[in-house]
Amino acid sequence: MTTDIDPIPARLASLKTATTAELKTQWRELFGAEPPSFNRRHLERRLAYRLQELAFGGLKPETLRRLERLGAALEEKGKGRGWGPAQPELMPITGTRLLREWQGVEQVVTVTSDGFEWQGRPYRSLSAVARAITGTRWSGPVFFGLKNHRSAA
Image (tube, rainbow, N blue to C red; front, side):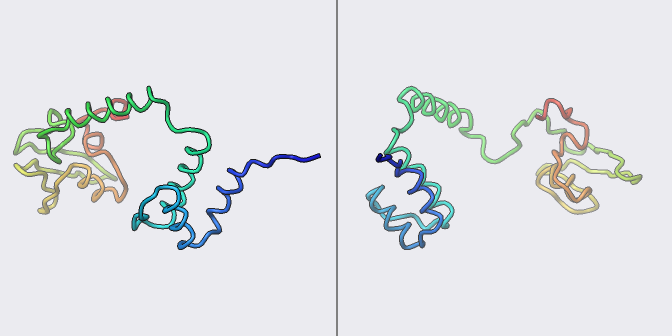
């Protein structure tokens, strides 16, 4: 009795043990182009996806169209905004003092024209101030009570 073994799982498993040179050779065969200078893990993941794509087919045309529409909408929404605050309506006016008690110490942050100031040091974001105060990652607007935690999620 002969059993047909699916070569795809075996090829996927072999990516982990292949040398970087072998991965690059496979890249050239599968993509018809020079491999990017990304790390090994990136090459493994992209090769694994490509092997499965060739064996089982890629994304459905309607999925591709949906992704294109979403990308275009995101691009349109972000035009002219730069890297400023994601929600400018949350930004208090310059000169506002934000107060927060943290571990029994009152923390005072002043809103400046180009960011925030805490303990005489400038910060570009309120989240950076919250991180400096707590030592952990926080949403600055949530930490200072400008946005409730539920709507931040």
